[in-house]
Image 1 (cartoon, rainbow, N blue to C red):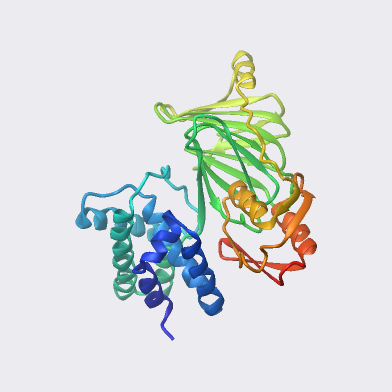
Image 2 (image 1 turned 60 degrees about the vertical axis):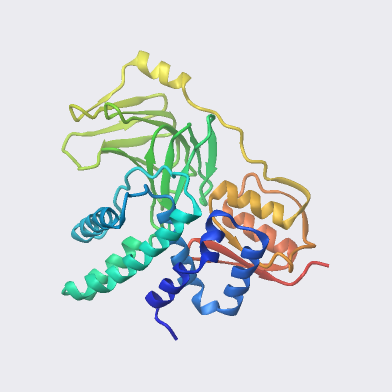
Amino acid sequence: MKNTDEMILLLLQDDRLTRWILNPDDETIAYWEKWMADHPDQVQTLLKAREIARDLAYADKPAGLEELQQSIWPGISEALDAPVKITHHKTFIPKKVSLHWLAAASFLGIFLAAGITYYSTRSKTASDEGRVVNVLLKEDLDRVNQTDHNQIVYLVDGSQVILQPGAGIRHSAFLQKDKREIYLEGNAFFQVAGNPQRPFFVYAGDLVVRVLGTSFKVSANKSNGEITVLVKSGKVAVSRRNGASGQQLILASNQGAVYKGQTLDLMGSPADRRTKLADEVPVAAPVNFDFEEAPLEEIIQTLEKAYGIPFYYDKNTFSRCMLTTNLTDETLEEKLKIICEAIGATYQIKGNGVFLDGKPCK
């Protein structure tokens, strides 16, 4: 059996993988569904290859391979030199790409995988190699509002985020078990599901906002580095990410803070500024999770769009499954349990996706 790196190389060279990412059709989807059914022990490898190709597809396109190499390895080296922890990701707004570029990007995937081998021979410890793989095969979700209106996105814990136009968040698909970390660029309003055992962190520029269960707005001005935080309900702690002494504010309902990126000052916002911010709390149309005699495929498409998480299942097996249910107030896992109980199926969370299995509905 080929090792993981060799299999990733082969998958990155398969044109059907690029079509699955950019222009999926019934034939391509059916091919990869059958591939996963035929190779259950290689599903994680396929998902890793898909993540590499996806990340490359939505990256800024360098002029040539030399520039590409120069842009990739410094980031890897920086990640290797840094402590092993979640770090802030820079701009991740997707760019439109063509199949020609993704084909070239797939070649870059080969270059990167070869780089893993190169770097592991250059490194003195096996842990460095593992960290290179971790950098290249990240399973974070990038969710960016590319529309001209506010857009609501859902997190698996029941939290909701309203992204204003151009804003984006990056986070692990199913969040961390001990804490929930979100990296924000732009302006967004957070409605956080309470869970004292899993504190919620939002990283925006030089600031970190820590909450347990509340609603608040974060606005980041990239031109001057100013970041504002407004708490609508609950309580948050706002501090500089470098942990500078004295740079922490505790904000309660209807209180705000302003961080001046040019002077590195963090201060409570004046009353008149808070009133203005309160008027700017964004609204967005919620996703409709109320289904009446809806086919399973329609429900899954709704969940994929709302949570940004892919589902893998045999469409033919579940083609006759119809559901009437309201899933508005449930977390993703609660939704999955309700759906699976209704159709006699089971689900598994693997990597960054959800896998459904079961028998045809009568």
